[in-house]
Length: 99
Image (cartoon, rainbow, N blue to C red; front, side, top):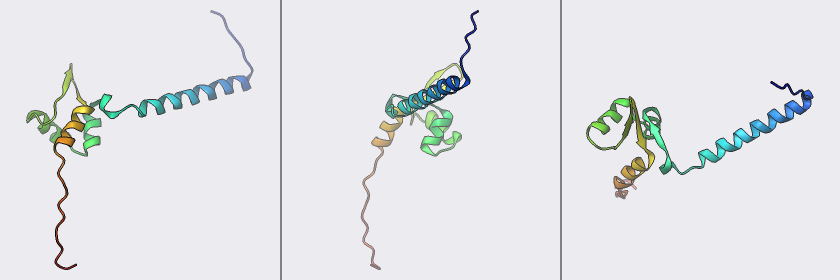
């Protein structure tokens, strides 16, 4: 195995560039459309702001489709978006008799 030595400043610059590259890649990944992602149970609960028990009920009742690989359950973000879109209700303007 060959050992390469570099000056400490060059090493720090190399590490800095690698960290910048890592930040850039993470930024690009976050820009990926939500519909192209698969979410696990925790992520789905956080996204919908619901409990694991509620999510299990959604699975049991066929409200949200899912995929299972071994013991791991995944939800398609596009299926979640579609479900939300299909259950959108128009706001109702109500007359306020005190106004």
